[in-house]
Amino acid sequence: MKGLFRNNVYAVLSSIRIFFIVMLLLGAVVVILNNNIPILVIGYMLLGMVGFSLLAIACLGKEESSKWHKYKLTAPVKRSEIVKSYFISLLPWLLLGMAFAGAAVTLSILLHGFPFGRDTDVFTLFVVGVDISLITGAIFFPLFYLGGEEKREVVLTISLLCSIGIVFGLTALINSFLPDKITTLQVIMGGFVLLACAFILYLLSYPITVFIFNQKEY
Image: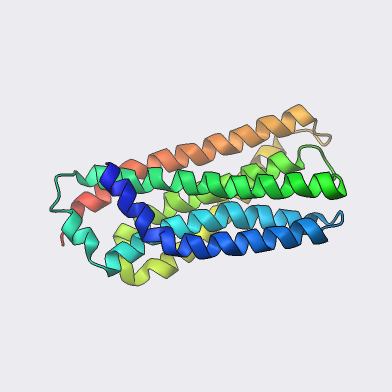
């Protein structure tokens, strides 16, 4: 498994390096220029969490292009382990995106004060970013093995759009059960429900992806 993780890191490393530098520069701009303008911090936080995750997800297509996926099947690893390595490899990049988001919002608050309307808005943004990232992966991985490399970009776009729709749909559903005046505790509980839904979808996607991958012949 260590070799699989190492390969996944190498596959995405060149793109991550560029995005890492871009995020550093954008972060400096957001922190310096932000003067109680929430949209700047909101956009940066979501870009960091979703952006790093999308790059990690997209590395699967790079592997197909290099034909490494065929050679890897000859190694003493199960197909389920190959799939598992993709699902697990996404998580550190998501954490890196969360670190960028956390650093930016912390510095912005220290320099310019709290720009949001509610104390829970920062928590909500983290929930949305994590949910979109996980659900995008949950949709992309099985669809990718169904559609193949030539449809990678289309599948990635569809996965992202569907994940956004699912997150907002779940949010609307949860809000429909809450009173008009929502307390801080209710917001936090709703956020954890959203996170639980995303993780459940992510976990359920793994056996589905393994099943589809096992049916593929190369």
